[in-house]
Length: 363
Image (cartoon, rainbow, N blue to C red; front, side, top):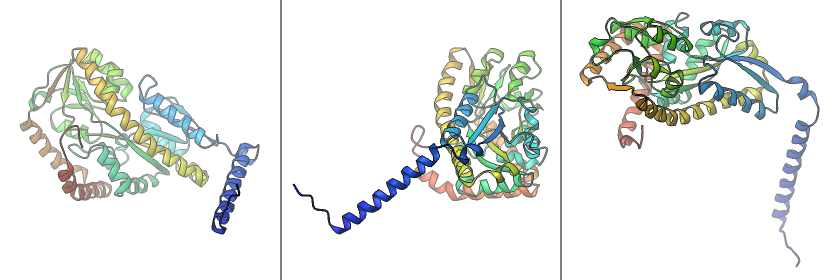
């Protein structure tokens, strides 16, 4: 049977074939030995997470995906904490080009500017989803990139881990029970816990277990519940105190040396930044599930879980509000961050109130 194709159809068919041929040609160019093979970019990236935790292999898989998506043109080797430099030295190391990139947490750089902590969390502040919204849709990323740019660093993107709770060797039933304890905390959480009478020490995550086991500290926080269980906190503490008022979320960063970043081709820049967004989604999805599973495991191990009285939480929140006014907003960067976050909260609060349907439906 004779097939009839009108003139418009013929033109569309020609355009389609041209596109197909162009795609085949492009794939052929990618698949043949060429200058691309000479332009492989190799980086070293140090993480703050130990290989024994869930996060390290997750980061390794992310970098493997980046290599595949780039056709092998961006090859990044992942190093554990201390693999290149000490965990709290990676900011300066990346800035100086000792290594090309790192995964870390802004809270660790408060010695450079106290306001850096606010990029990580604010007590009684935004949760993980809202922090990502603030970063990617309300200007937070631009504020942080401007701040990091002054140190020869490019912020490729951010991600968030869940609310951090307290793990204690002794019961904490009220606000007064914190007084006199020695605990591991960082960032704005450290400021708040000091106000509650805790003698605060700063430790990398990998040292928390030993510090608790030896009695060097009485209580601590570090990361989501899955990480806490993997670290064996149930072996060295008996009590989990909630809620995580001091650290509603812990925002992490992927940072690249600025000179290194400028040399990267534009398509790889776009690919890498998009991959960090994908990493943020992957982490959040896994964390919700694995933390819920970890909670059940903690219960099975006999962990005693308690919640502070609402009247005590109200008192602690008053202290946090005072710290915002008296301390955290005192630098120009701190004021810029907190003002921006407050504008975000004012904008989204009516919508959140209208849409909220209770636990299990929306957050």
